Figure 1 (cartoon, rainbow, N blue to C red):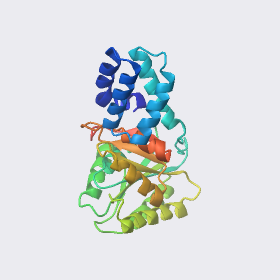
Figure 2 (cartoon, one colour):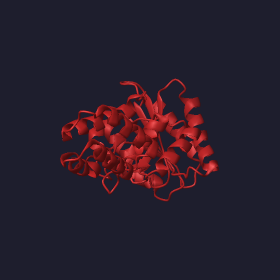
Figure 3 (cartoon, rainbow, N blue to C red):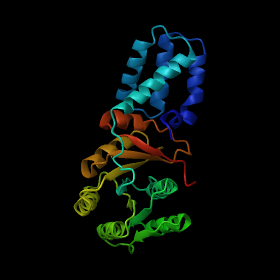
Figure 4 (tube, one colour):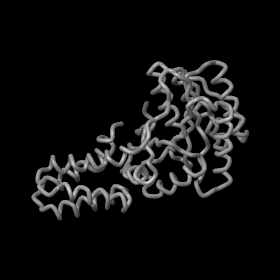
Length: 275
């Protein structure tokens, strides 16, 4: 999903009303600041955006001009972020992490479908061995998409599932391995250390292969998402984000805060469980 579409449902009608009505620059900037805060963008990020627009808007009066300035500022937040290290035509690994209920399993299936449609052979790993339906949910997606899934018994060591999936990925020469992990609260250090162990297994087994660690965020989380991102970056070195559940009342603005603070890009955005 393109950035220009990301806030379309949540903000665009309000922005159009703001920019269309006759207001002076100070009124426009004041109301725009309020809208951005209500969209879950952090105060420091909003302040920077409003300051930059204010400097450039001395002679701006049209709705289109303000929209363009806002678009430029939002894009600028992501200009310093990295690109995905996934190699075209090579062997790659994507590890999905996040808190409980963020949408990791559905995101794993959607990513598998996305890369499958682009000609990649994909293997899924169900390393969520704590949740009762963790492995079965991903296995059902695998059957539906005709994509193999490596899983383990409930309560099994997730590290062993990851190791087995790495062996299968390598021996059967799959292009891409997507690993779904159990949800874990960022405040639980023991669970975060377990995640660090999984990453260590991946790095030891596939030291020369591109490996991405993406944080899956529920778009409705709000400003707590920044806290999540900071903690997951500390323990797992996340280098990208997937924004899930944009089909509800989510605003999604928190990704602007995270990108501005941690320089993390958003690689995908999803709308519920539709393919």
